[in-house]
Amino acid sequence: GLGDVYKRQILKWLIDKDYKYIARDSGGGLYVYYEQPPKKDRIWGSAIGDHFSICDFRDLFPFVKWEDSTPTPIKDVLDNCEVVNSDL
Image (cartoon, rainbow, N blue to C red; front, side, top):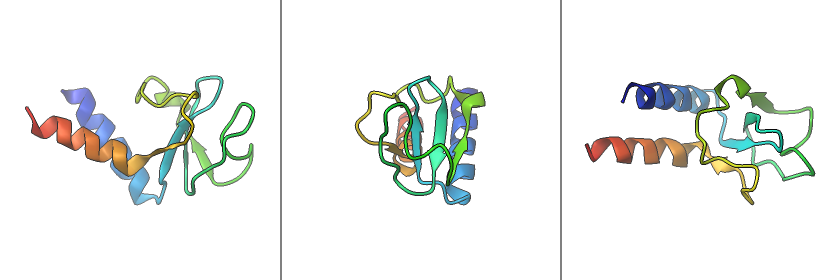
């Protein structure tokens, strides 16, 4: 659907900007990272540093959860979006 097109555009933009990982903090905020961040008490990585909030898109990518043991590679999400779309 149209939502999938927008999700793919967001993911491609993030990859073009060299972001590699996406993760959700304990409060539900969505963040992207240049390098794989370590999981802390309530956040991934540090409160300052090479990450970018995409909390405005917090409803996107619901499969990215705080409970995940590792951050999700953005490329994997993009690849899975394209695989799903090609099956239509």
